Image 1 (tube, rainbow, N blue to C red):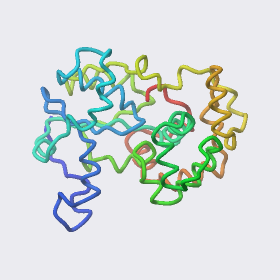
Image 2: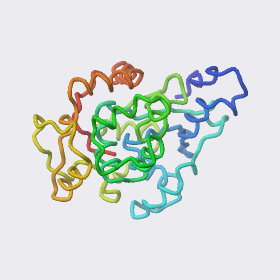
Image 3: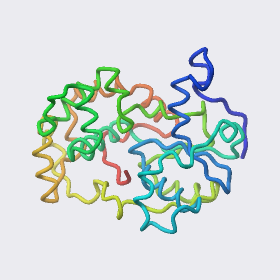
Image 4: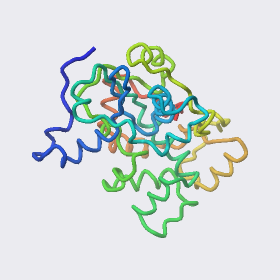
Length: 272
C-alpha cells in the first residue's frame, strides 16, 4: 500500500532535520511493525496502551498481555528511523475527539496525581495544590502555550503526526471497527490492555451528565472514583470551557472532523 507521502513538519523550520523540533517530536512517536513494514503513530490517551502492548507482542518482545509492564519502559524501542518513515508500506494513526481526550486526561492522570499531574505543577507553580485542581482551572492553565505543549497526555494530537497524510485514520470512538483493518493491513493483532492497565473509565458508573462538575476539586473526584463513581466527561464542560478547548485544540478538531466526522460532544471513550 506504499504511496507518495510527505513528512508533515520537514519544512516547518529551515534547519537540519535532526534539529527540527516539530519533526523530531512527531518522529519520536512513530513506531514500526517490523513484519509488515508499517508505521503506527502513537498518540497518548488514544488507545496507546492497547496499541503498544499489541506492538510489543507482534514484534516478539513479550509473549502475551501478562507482560504489559514492559511497554512503559520501552516507548522508544520500536522507533522508526528516517528510512523506515520514507519507505513505509502502510501508515496509520488513531485519533480521538479532542473534548473526550482532554476530559479523560483530567479524570485519569490529573485526578490520580500521576506523573502528568506532577508535570503540570512543575509547569504552573511549585506550590500548586494538586488536590484542589478543577477541570476549569486545568483548561485555564492550558492557555499558556508552554503548558499546552508541556506533557504528551494533553499536547495537541496534531503535534504527533509525522506524515502530512496517512493511509488510514481510525477513531477511538469506533475502535472496534478498526481492529480488523489494522490486522489485515498492518499485520497487527490488537490486544486489549485495559484489564492490565486499569486506566479505562469504563470501570466506573457515571454520575448524571447534567450535574456540573467543572469546578469539582480533584480530591472529591478521587473520592467518588474510590466508591466506583465518576463524573460523566460531559459534565466537566460548560459553554465557556468548551469554547476555550475548541480554541486551544482547533487544529485537532479540524483534523478530526475532516478524517472522522463531527466530535462526539464529550462522550467518554472506553479505550485509553
